[in-house]
Image: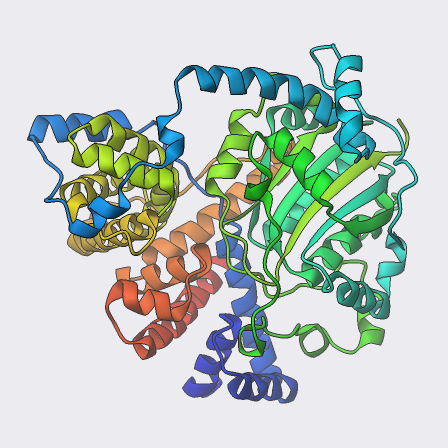
Length: 374
Length: 187
């Protein structure tokens, strides 16, 4: 059994709550002590199990119950504080006339039809938007299937990420920006979504599926282009996800679901189109700030210490396990041909309402999973 | 505080309680999620969330607007849940049926489509939830705040009104206790 103070050091290390000096001590302990490594692995696993618990939501809307209790008990809000009076002045938006909502909804409906098409086809020029909207009168957003178009960016062969050196290089590359769009060529986009889901679950990220995507997954429909949007990912987590999509599963003869990815910066045009798709303004999807000063940088990966030397690691097809980030992170999956003019569904609304703020230095990521068989 | 929240708070203070309904709808899911983890069952979690909203409503005029409205609400809800859990501690240890607690349906439809996976997943969730439920309220609270809410030690200390050192040692003991419970269950 490890002495109490060492155990405490390891739990604080797991929580990412150590000063750089104490972190070094913890790393030294992990390097030197097999018992420390064993305990740390178990604590890390417990942590992941806790974070993987599903997030319950109330079965009912509680607002009628609360309002009923307020009325029944004759409750009144407390006296108004001066600062609250000043702060509570209604913003200009609240004075907008009621018809504006309908007008906005109608324009959004039209815009979504056209912009979704633009979004998936990778068009960026603003002056082409109107033309495409006119060409897309059908109620369903243009189904976009098939292999990804040739796009500029860094091309990554996912199979190559089996090498630790390649993963490290990609992670370093991904740390240069804070928002990315990745266009992936998938042999099986459905399997890719399922793998993403499992990989995210172990990292405490809950996947929210839009109704259209959920239907396709339920019916096990292949040949669909899926869109995956996530925030608050670390660069090494994104690398691990890509690795996960490009490796052969243990004990399986099946090809991995994805072949390659083209990595490019998420441009303002991409962001604007995504915002239209989600029914929010582009400001809501602003890129996260760059990393905080060194003292707040997340702890270094423990792979080399916990999982043995690289030669040993290369034998495994599974991507390395990392200490996950704080939970409650959400990712959204949409089916490209199922985001229709009915506008953002309740799942998208739920995602937008519940997503936590973006942490500085983390990544905002849009993956477009093209099914190359289509 | 977001402009929307301010607007709704102002309307509540002017006597329009429906605006408070909107605030409830806006934040109930997040509060419920935390409350559920802290108290361990749906019924109590709903009571905690309702109680927290009622307390917030009565103190709304005192909300200074120098923190997020949700943070303020969250603090009220966490304290309500801890207080309820403390009150129920003895009663729960006698009456609760751990096998019935915490079996949460998987949210993910693709998981549902694989019966054996769903069963394993449900069993795993049951084990973890049950172990979490056996911890003392203090230990359970720090684990929930840290692991499920992603709170920093400093924020947790402020929220619970204890020194950071206490948070550190509670978390340490909570993790070891949880480890012990899970190992025992797996054995």
